[in-house]
Each structure stands twice: as structure tokens, then as C-alpha cells.
Image (cartoon, rainbow, N blue to C red; front, side, top):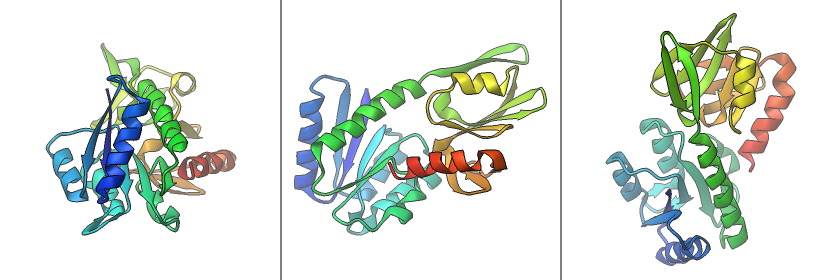
Length: 234
């Protein structure tokens, strides 16, 4: 089940958008929930509700969509839920980048573009639900790629950094890169990074939401910049 939250203080927009989603996904593959305030959305998520995608209005009255996004990414430590920001204005691009949105749509929302985004995310989530499998010590481990922030290689040692901690694995970074799903970018001979966990970046390094700062090798800077710019302006 792919779960979508529609959060907008315009009840007509919420009803119309929910109807569009249900029309295009008439089966049980996609579910929707509507929230007229950012506070209510945060409240249910704090209690354990999970959404694969939030369609989030930027102007939400007493709070803003950007504030809701920051709460999701930082306070709730949720990097997996995708956010598509929605607004009648267009001047938010740089401000929104810090919460890693999947897209930005201008009202009135184009139905074909919205459904195209959802189709992409359905495939992406299916891919992310794949697991990385490895030997660690005397155990065989399976970890969802979506829970992995980055892989680190030091000599013959590979360390897997996850949301919950890290562990060493018997594997080669080149082989991991070959098998990893879309969304993992090689920024250095020693680092393969899940772009969902990048908080901010500059030409020489990325800052991860887990707190680490990782170097981008000079030979990879152009490719990494083009990749991250494409992700940030999708």
C-alpha cells in the first residue's frame, strides 16, 4: 500500500486532489488521507502514522509547509517520506531545498504531472524496499536500502551506516554500487551515499542528516553537482 497525505488549508483543493488520485488508482494500491492543518498532520505522524508521500501546501495559515517539512526531516528524523510542495507562488525554490522535496507544483496543479510524479514514486519505493544483504561477523544480515545513509570503504573494510547505527560487512564498494538502487551516488572512492540523507552540500563535501560531513573527491565533483542539481530541481 502506497499512502499519500494531502495537506492544504483549502478544503476544495484537498477534495479535488483526492478525487484525482482515486480516479487514477481505483484499486487498493494507493490510499489517501486529508489534513487541513500542518499541526494535525504532524500530530498523527508523531503517533506513528506513516506516509510514503505528502502533498504539502506551503501557505498553511498558522504554520507553513516548510516548517512541517523541517519537523518531518529533523525532529521526527524521517528521510524516507517524499514531499511534493504545492503553492500558487513560485519563489520558494532555494528555501525548499533544505527539506529535500521530490518536486514543486504550482496551482492549479496539472493532473498529468501529479500522476507522473506518483508513478515514479511508486516504482522508487518498490525499489527501495529491496534489501542489502551481506555477511557481518558470523551473521547474514538483510537491511532495507531505504534505511541506509551511506556505505564507507576503508581499505578492505566496508562500513554500512544506517539510521540506527553502523556495522561492518564483508563486501566491496564497487560491487555494492553496481547492485544498489537508484538514489545512491558515488561521491568519493570511499563513499556511496543515499541522496535522501543529504542535508546540504557544496562543491567539496556533503553534510548528512546523521551529522557526518563527507568529502566529494575532486574527480567526481562535476558529476555529483549535476546529479544533485537535477535531484533538487526535479
